[in-house]
Image (cartoon, rainbow, N blue to C red; front, side):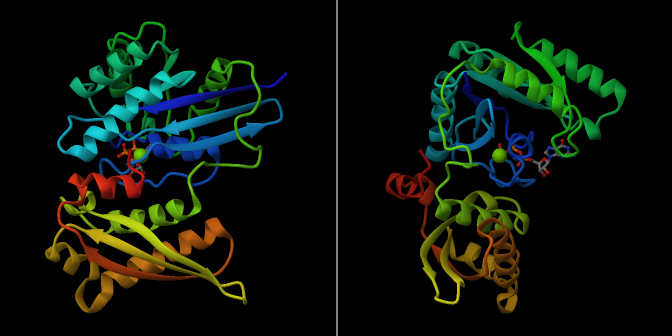
Length: 294
Ligand SMILES: Nc1nc2c(ncn2[C@@H]2O[C@H](COP(=O)(O)OP(=O)(O)OP(=O)(O)O)[C@@H](O)[C@H]2O)c(=O)[nH]1
Ligand SMILES: [Mg+2]
């Protein structure tokens, strides 16, 4: 008899949900960056062993809605929590818990699913801060939820957490083929890898103002994969930054993204990037629909 279940990862932006997902899956499924709100879509990562399958849903970090995009990301969280078998609430042990965490704790409690709390970034905490973080986690009021300290970056504390998650999944048939690691469409996965490199090279409001879309993929007879993608910016000034002096920035972005893409598709890639401007795309429902940001 197999077991299978869906575990939703919730937490404030930047606490390390995607890093933890990638570690659990053993592959880069979700992109990671220092910028808050890196994850914009609910991304599924799948772990399969002979007798169980766990589908982890990496949810966008939650904060106060500021624009229609953030609003969509939040209602998605509530829905995904309700539809899951268990919730993993991730905290950044470096930060004190705050209103955002209490909001998420209420959403987890309202969803009525069993929950665990991971206190992440243990590698950056001294004993006193870790002790305080555990006490703050306890004070969030999810009384049934066990608390696991650890580090998604180093893997410390990861085994007991995984075992506890596995114990929460119910009997049932596998939801995805055993070899699948994610439900992301290949073109979206590629677009995300480009966006990750843009995030690493931009700051302030620019990371939030950028989206990437794959326009075309062409397989050459010699096996080369030609990918054309657009980087959407909201302003001409953003476009200039993204292209950089003499095209330096876009070239570096393209080279780094191509390497990451080649690792995932396991073949040679030629990547062509074009920076385009669409004013206010984050408030444009048609554009958000097309980009799959529900
Ligand atoms: N030192 C340390 N850094 C970590 C750890 N986990 C994640 N990070 C870093 O924290 C930053 C945010 O990580 P993400 O995995 O993108 O965080 P997230 O919760 O998915 O963020 P959003 O998608 O914005 O909600 C990145 O720079 C990670 O490398 C950890 O255990 N230790
Ligand atoms: Mg993320």
